Length: 137
Image 1 (cartoon, rainbow, N blue to C red):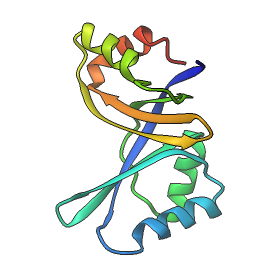
Image 2: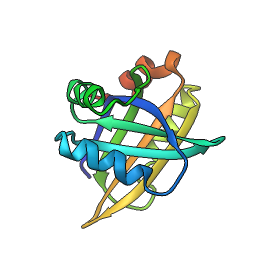
Image 3: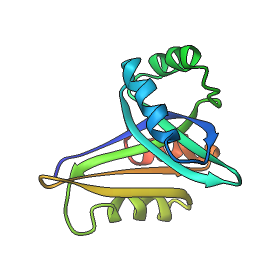
C-alpha cells in the first residue's frame, strides 16, 4: 500500500461569494500555468475564503501579482496520496491522536483507479512534530 505524505505551503485569499468567482480564479491561474495540488473554498460572511496549495509556491506568488490577487502569508498543510482501502486515513490520524495533535480540519476523496487523496491542517505549533511523526517530505 503505497502512500505519500507531504508537508506543503498553502495560501488563503478572499473572493466575492458569488457565482463564477471560482471559475474566474482558476482560469487566471491556468492561464499563468500554475499547477494546484489542492484547492478548498468555503463561505466566510459575505465573502469566500479559498485556500490554494500550489505545486510551486513561487509560481503562484508571481501569478497572483499579475492577476492582482491578495494572497495571505504562506501557511502549512499536509497532503496524503495513496492506494485507496478501507480505513486509509486511520493509521495517520491515530498516530496524530496518540501524539495529542489535534486536526484543525481535513478533507479526503477517492480519486478513482484505486487511489485517494486527503488534505489536513494542524495548528502551526504542531506542524513540525506532525511532519516528523508522519515522515512527511
